[in-house]
Length: 305
Ligand code: FE
Ligand code: FE
Ligand code: ZN
Image (cartoon, rainbow, N blue to C red):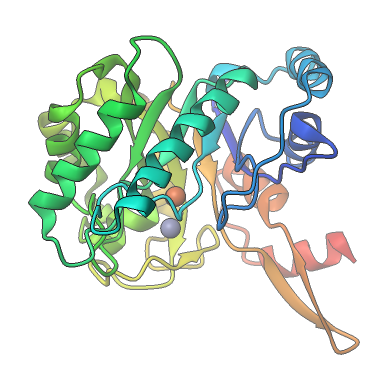
C-alpha cells in the first residue's frame, strides 16, 4: 500500500474539543488534520478539556491517525515582523507562547505560523523582529516545533522566498524547534513555477534543507504564477492544475511529510440562502484515485444536499 499522509483543515470548538476535529477529519477519509485552537482571526481562546483530549487521542489511535502528523495553525493576526507598536508586538509574542502551551497540552507537536508583514520597516528589519520574537517564544530546547509558512508575498509579507525563510532560521537559537510549511498556492503566487517542481525542491534543499520540511499545504491557486495574491482554489480547478499537485502529493522525497488541504468551501444559493459545503472528502477521494474528477463541484453539492 502506498503511504499517503493526507488531511485538511478542520474546525475545533471548545464544546467538542479535539474530539470534534478528529471526527470531522475521519468523515473526509483523512489520516491527519490541521486546526486553529480558536477563531483564526482572533485570539480568544478557551481552556483545554483534558477529558476530551484523552478521548480524542484514544480515537486517533483506534482509527490510525498518528498524532505526530497533526498540525495546529497559529492565528494569522499574530505579526512578529512589525514592532512599531510595542504593545501589539509584545502581545503577539505572549500569545504565541500561550498557543505553544495549548498545543503541547493537546499532544500536538507542530504549529504552522505566518512569519509576518513588515508594514514598511523593510524585509531585513522585519526579519530581525521575527528572529527576536521567535527566540523569546522558543526559549526552551523542548516543546512543539514552529513551522514557518512560505507566503505569497501579498503586501509586505515576509517569507515569499526560501532565502527569506532561511534568513529567519539562521537566527533561531533552538534550531530543533523550527521547520518550514510549504504552501503550494503561496509559492506559486510568490513566483515559483510548479510546472517544474523537482527544480523547486532542489532549490529548497540547497537553501533550507529538505530535513526542515515539516508540513505541506496542498492548494490550487485562482491566480497566475507570481501574482502575489494568495487566493486558494479547489484541487485541479486553478492555475497550478491537478497533475502538478499530484506530482507533489506523491513525490518520493515527501512521503513522510503531512499534506493538508486548505481549499475553499463550495458555496451555493438555496432558497435565497447562501450555503457552503466542505470539499475535502471528495478532493481526497480524487487524490487517492489520482484522476481528476470533472464533476467535482456537482458531486460535493449532491453529497451534502
Ligand atoms: Fe497559513
Ligand atoms: Fe497555507
Ligand atoms: Zn493562503
